[in-house]
Length: 138
Image 1 (cartoon, one colour):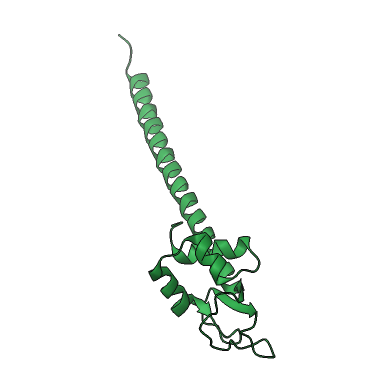
Image 2 (image 1 turned 90 degrees about the vertical axis):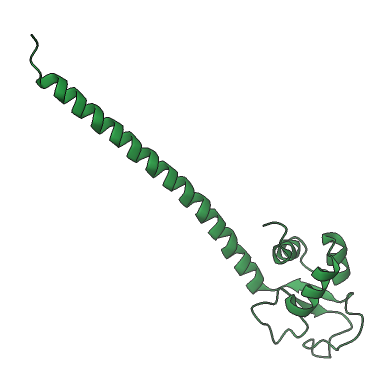
């Protein structure tokens, strides 16, 4: 799971409070497909409009209008300042909790099977002991 692009970006964003796309691309060694997916689906260019798919948003640099809200579309937006969006962090934490819950449930299931096996063995042993005690000695 560590190789998934979204998780790599969220982990990077958690480690770095603010970053540029250039540093993100270089540090994560993103491929052309990764860059295209980031640009088309995960990047919010308008911080007032975010979809649940957006992971990072622009927060500073020359590409913002005077109010700091909209990205002025220009060819080179790689050196603007970006941050990870809070909903991406919350979704990532939810994912980590689900992974941990699955591990815990697997352990609990294995321990319950062990408890069933032990109870079956003890029950069979008690029946065997009771049977041998009821036979009179000759």
